[in-house]
Length: 160
Image 1 (cartoon, rainbow, N blue to C red):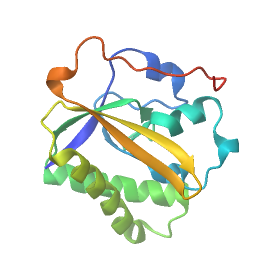
Image 2 (cartoon, one colour):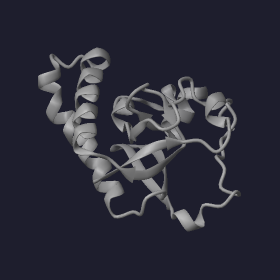
Image 3 (spheres, rainbow, N blue to C red):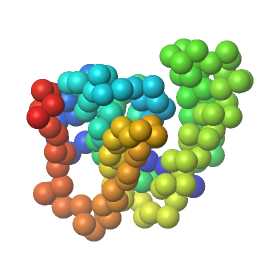
Image 4 (cartoon, rainbow, N blue to C red):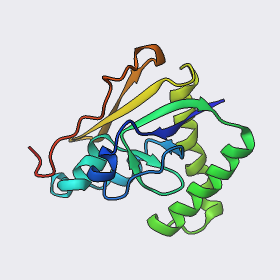
């Protein structure tokens, strides 16, 4: 089974995300955070998190790049519990038990995304608001293609 961990090539995530993910923490898309957002919510560091930030499961922070790697079943179960607790704490789920199915589904989606990729494959996410809601697209950078010229590219905080 495969999932993805946060990876940093430089310090840019520390500057562009209000809460950067920790290098090495397990990540998922985390698009649920933006389900009720409008254009008015897309400013500054929040815009950057929306546009291309993966969600770190331990910190709740965001990261630009994740790398595919193997995850053990016991680690996965810990992450399910962690995410369910996050849903209770930050999104008003009635209990961790009630949030478990949604947490499992979020992690299953990430596992599905990673499963066919070799270890160390890099992934990026790009989001946009549409009339139908948030649309996500993923970019895959195969391990052999990821050279030193692969750095995070960010817009400025003024939205230009």
